[in-house]
Length: 151
Image (cartoon, rainbow, N blue to C red; front, side, top):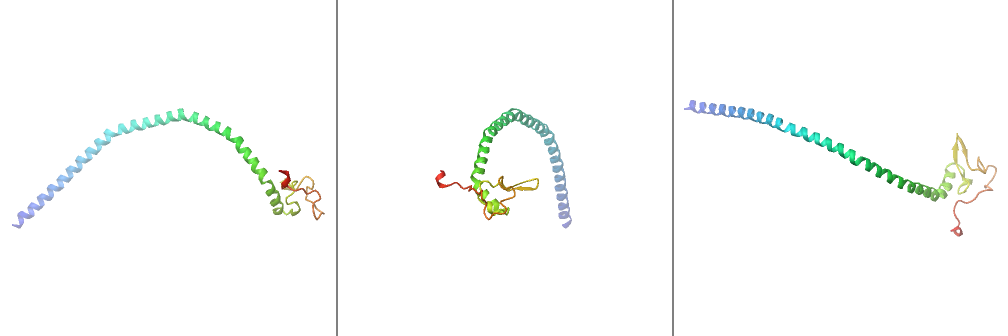
């Protein structure tokens, strides 16, 4: 009796394996057919996307570039005036702190202070190019800070 049960199990196992092999072959064929059917559609979609991107670039890029150029033209003077305003506003602070940092404490807060280097030569100010040497206080010192009555 065991022989027929064993034979039945082997036959079932063989049938299952054959069915799996046939299913796998069928699915491989279906997958190949799906790839063949979908590939032309994907290629056409890719070409269409490229054409749309080219049209967008041709049609939108020039007006957008022109609009950005116009915006830059309008903003540049504003930015320039803001920079000038910041420089003017910060000048008293700059002319007070920079002399201390550059070892010219007698010049701190002086409106004549320049403190820039040209070809390695420091120009402290037009009145005293090397700084007010030989003086305890600079005789030409003039405050950079506005007076309250100057408003």
